[in-house]
Length: 66
Image (cartoon, rainbow, N blue to C red; front, side):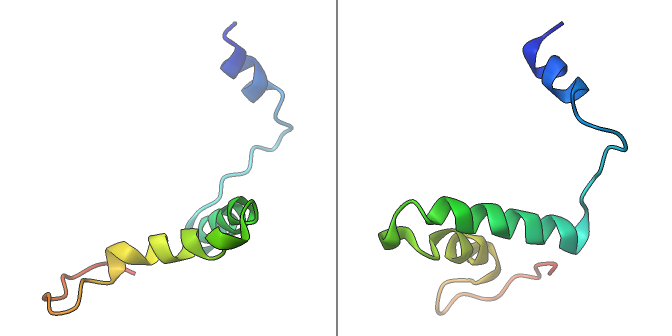
């Protein structure tokens, strides 16, 4: 058995899948935790996540699902 498959087999039942707002919240927590490594990087991940939704100044705003 591959190591990755062995680790996945250790996951307790029932397997939980995050979707929608739950997934967004979990990824926000992970991003904030990663940013804790350096005070200089505080908020970096959240700002990067906003880039696809915020067109540069003077550009037409594309239709982006929220």
